[in-house]
Image (cartoon, rainbow, N blue to C red):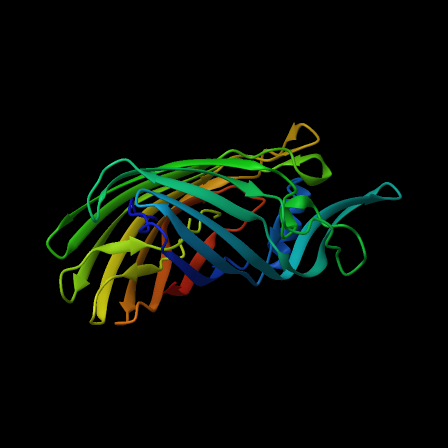
Length: 310
């Protein structure tokens, strides 16, 4: 989720966000059974995304931001179906750990309405292929693009956000769509859509909020803000968000068991000090999901963030 607010002209912010996602742990027997159905299903112990972001106010209504992630997938394994000497068998291949820089998001936000908070804003940007696409398994084979830290593709991003405040309550709705281009190894990962609504309650003196950074790959934000105030304050929030990912294509062929959709419920809190330092945390749980067989369902994800103005 991201709000419609923009930074003041000449003001900036930096932030760090850490997201830990725990997928459903499918057994080797399950992966082998899926391989027998010619589904190349995979699993990891966890997925980690550590991102550094920066934002700067070009004008009072126009903010530029960029975010660069570091990605880690632990204990990647995949079911395979093999035919040897007229005999078929299924087995699980241990591909090892995957870690490296991911693809950078560069975004521009323009606020259509005036005022200190809320209103309506449009977002446009692009995902830049800065991530590695040549990581190899423990056996020395190049991993498929969907397992790489980067994709090798340039992906346009479009979105919008609207918000309104009533006393200490802030209601925000936002959506982002990422159009996937053709990347490494002739692979085109599926388009992605993230949309949702969030309700937050501010505890402390009335003030306006200035957004500092965004995270726009797989639905979590660097939820850091610069606030012009002299006292520290707390915010509590809850988000209901939906995520959709289309099927991927490899060499022009659609992978029918890829992609999926899910709805997440994410409560969290944010503390902002008198000097503007922001600390946040949230826990997300899927309340509904329909992930196709090549990918596991998700159990939960935890996000921690810190931000500071400059």
